[in-house]
Image (cartoon, rainbow, N blue to C red):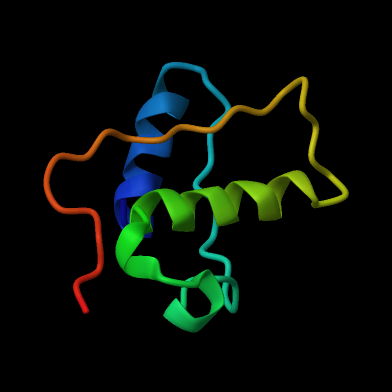
Length: 82
């Protein structure tokens, strides 16, 4: 999900009284193939989303009793061909 789409989803949840916000993209993590090993065997969207979640839970203002993560479902190829 792109950041623009994530912000639209967050706005829809906010319209129903849910305190929601889109996580920013985390730069410089394992998004590069050399950092992720043999990325051809990995689900790239899951890898990127997991990195963003791990980044968030390590922030000093993270509150596990008040936060949850959303992972959308995807059909189709999720691997990088190389």
